[in-house]
Length: 503
Image (cartoon, rainbow, N blue to C red; front, side, top):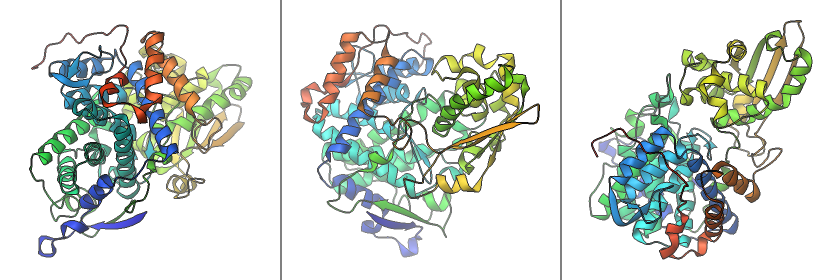
């Protein structure tokens, strides 16, 4: 890996193209290196994971809306839309839109956290959609996804967006453009233009994840993927883009991030170096914001001890304090200063970004479910609301340091939970990483990904269709171009969005 120092260059000192970050990203995308076996296997795992969480959300409102919009843009020889019959085809960018919303809706797929946040599997729907429409085989899909994961992870390692309240999908636009460039075997020049365009059109504020969080949270990455596909299409037709998009005097770093004096260290593979970043990412066992994963596991572990002390009378708890990282405290904890995070009538999207709510329910139930744990009835339970109000968070420097640790063995996303009882006693425990994390108590392997798919798609997908999909995706790297439509999964039934729109 080579670390590139990325900073602003005024027009009077214009940065040559070959020194621009977008050009270096394009170099990674156009470097046709073999995909190593462990990377290939993890890509297959994440294809399974995406299908699982998307099918679990297939009849939720935002997914219905996105699917209806996609169907209005039908195209013979286009891409498939998850849940619909494979014969139903839509224009690639709209299939990517529908499938991207389905994948993101439940906040249940993979994650990478460093200087910023990301859900790298958001790259899968747009790349698969373009592959189906363009007639690209499974081996090239694997290469494209290795590129997309590499680019997104490396951008997340080096450039913090949330510090300036820019939504993290600004790293997704360039990674999708790079991945599609690899998929189609495009030149470095074309990919460079596409990366510039994709970043330019996918910068948005973080209000989508602040206060009363709406259904747009699910649409945001799908929107970035759709715009990136369109950017690649324009670049292929010879159109240019704003440049330098990172380093220009009126570009992203200068005007949206830390300004003209800032320098961002972005690591990228050198020419000929394998793209392995996907192995540094991790998926979710629980349907909630990633920084709550380990804490859900900890709450479930502590529940028997708390019950023994209280006799299941939760009012015997005086208060609960979570000592954790800056990110967890300020994004999903009381450091966010969002009163909505304590509101029983808040949206599901808001509740899955409230560690106070999540801890209250996980402690009381001793489990977590992607639907039941968020139901309005569950959120409004009176003893839950009382417990919820007693939970607070604070930043602990040692947990912030571990969050930012470069050493994977020391990097952590957990905290210390301290439960104080009305009789003056207390218990506490810590957890560093989620049980499903590669360094956790029960790391996810192929069997766990398959089980997640089977359990989440039960009663949504026929057993024979479940097995057909799994058999297909297991052979992804040898899949013929004519058979990539078999990566679609048909649902037993689909609810339709009946509200009329423009399309």
